[in-house]
Image 1 (spheres, helix red, strand yellow):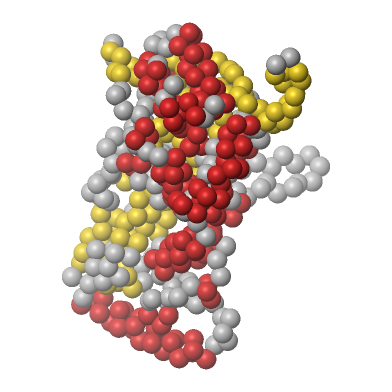
Image 2 (cartoon, one colour):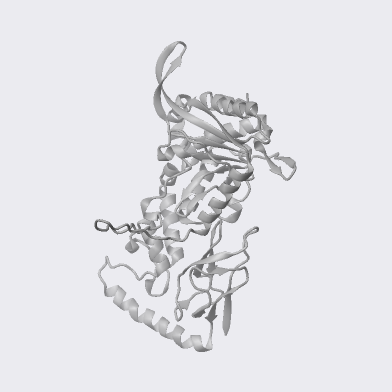
Amino acid sequence: MRVEVKVPVLPESVADATVLAWHKKPGDPVRRDENLVDIETDKVVLDVPAPQDGVLAEIVRGEGETVLAGELLAVVETDGAAAAPAASAEAAAQAAAPAAQEAPAGAAPPLSPAVRRLVEEHGLDPSQIQGSGKGGRILKEDVLRHIEAAKAAAPAAPQAAASSVMQAAPAETRPEVEAPAVGGPGQRPERRVPMTRLRQRIAQRLKEAQNTAAILTTFNEVNMKPVMDLRARYRDRFEKEHGIRLGFMSFFVKAAVEALKRFPEVNASIDGADIVYHGYYDIGVAVSSPRGLVVPIIRDADQLSFAEIEKTIADFAVKARDGRLSIEELTGGTFSISNGGIFGSLNSTPILNPPQSAILGMHKIQERPVVENGEIVIRPMMYLALSYDHRIIDGREAVQFLVTIKDCIEDPARMLLEI
């Protein structure tokens, strides 16, 4: 029987998608729920699983083609013509099993293209992964299970990258970009690469923000010593109690929520001729992923503890790296925080994330001489930048909002006492 594989229902506001990569070729045996193809929208990458066991009989839409929801992608044969190939595939797997047993202990298990990509991205040793497929074949879910087990064994590892939020994608996870060949004298090599759908969407939204919003930026600086001292005092106990490291971002999220409560204009957005004041606090955190910048949302941040915020951010960092953020995690948000400091930025003007009306930019912590009580002392200082839409936020509110964040960071007890 021929079973059709179709493009799944796309997220709301997503019109079409692009076939990113096929993990099977015609004639390959497939298992029910095994990922056949990745399709890329302008927000997320979606897996399209096999609907039944069988053989991939035909690929209708190739890599790079644009598809709509419900369109035919491929055909899977589940019986009849598929029986012979499936039987021969099973026989081949059984024949390969004894050979695998006789192979040297360090021999790598057979890897499909999708599994090989995952293994290479995470720098894994295939011989350390237990395969659950026929003949000991390693499946994609085996690799994901191995990765999750490693994270559970060492919870501090993802947090080290996640606490700064806007983490740099590890070199091995970044898309390979072939550098232009170094030519001889007089040669000027160049190469043309299509923009990914995510990059196109980023470009569209940022240009939209520039064209529609009256963007201004106000700056301040904050003494990070109180927060750093507090972290040093309770770091070990916090990690032992909650299983996650205490980073800086939870302090800034909490400070932002306190400031948003005092200045609701900053938590508002424009909808036509109306101003929409949001009575909730969904904070977006900018995260650098292999596919580009994404902004997952911490929902109801005012109701979360420091530990819950840190765990949410750590989870976002891992999902962004692995391309597993869902559309729900990327949709909405009333305010955003971006941390260019992880890349060494000393100061910058962040751009709005429409339809939000403001974004906070964090930067590198650097020891500088400052004056306290008439004396020059060395303190770990950070520049803060608040970009805001002047159409609904006046300069006074913007400056006072940023001062509120500064006060909360320099005296963290304010956030607990709400003063």
